[in-house]
Image (cartoon, rainbow, N blue to C red):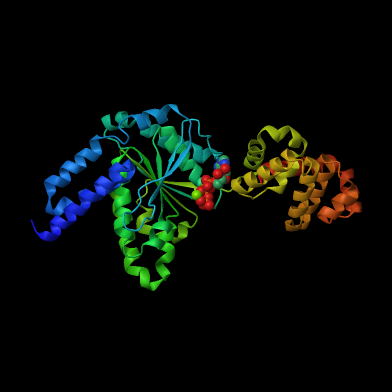
Length: 390
Ligand SMILES: Nc1ncnc2c1ncn2[C@@H]1O[C@H](COP(=O)(O)OP(=O)(O)OP(=O)(O)O)[C@@H](O)[C@H]1O
Ligand SMILES: [Mg+2]
């Protein structure tokens, strides 16, 4: 054996021992997955043996996954760390079956229900010579639920979700990200799991930077191959806010494209109610106003504000009426004239704000409010209909 080969073997052995003795089982798996790739050319038998071990010995040998099946704990661990860079390649979400279902538009929830069903009935499909959907890309604005939906799907399937943040992979290790990416992907393939490529457009976005072109080409190639070769025993999900930046070649390799829309008025109302949780009764009478206020906002915006409301009430720093008034004041300047009137009428019918206060908030004169009040029945009806369609 040549000296450099022997040196490498020794250092690999030391690395395995170090990881194993510090009980970093996940890191051991990652490392072994990388060895399989490295030794495949020169030592095919060794590579084969290691590969078999990886595939046949479940992580944490039963206990880990058996336990998680029955538990509802939510665990976020930092997984495989690149030996040299200490860059965390994968994050793990290990959610239990009670992970709350995201709020989804009917079309989205139907596609995802089928995707989950296919996974659960993989054998039935196989008897008919069919494969389940193995890759899907989630498209949508920030904060509409792409990430939590990926977590929910993995939880429904009873497997962990590995999240690979491509921005992190790329920015920290240009020049080596191709091999890091492969190592992370090998790891994800070696255990029953869902792999989530978050911000897949990150690869495309960097294209303008000339110095990185060679590296990017390598990354895109790796991803293209992986999407093509992903085993149907695993599920590959990806997400992007910028579908227009994604390589067409990559795009058409995904089996299923799911579009997450900014919530419509009905979904906004449902979200407000959900995020208010036990404090809902305190805001019940203003739900219409709140829904109007949060039109065209993302779920995460709504969640953030409702959490703030709840904290304010819990600490007694504000009252529900005051919170509503403040948020309404913030929102009113963004409205067009017709919306301002509609909003003023909604405030007039649903809150005890005076006409003067409504004027201050919306800029709609008291005369106009009074005038519309006289035709209130039709107007108010129209406004509530608008706010449920939008
Ligand atoms: N569809 C939804 N149903 C319930 N809650 C949601 C939904 N969308 C977003 N949220 C809330 O907003 C937070 C952010 O959502 P998430 O991280 O899934 O958004 P995202 O679409 O992945 O955004 P980004 O593009 O910025 O990564 C979640 O933690 C959740 O509390
Ligand atoms: Mg996300």
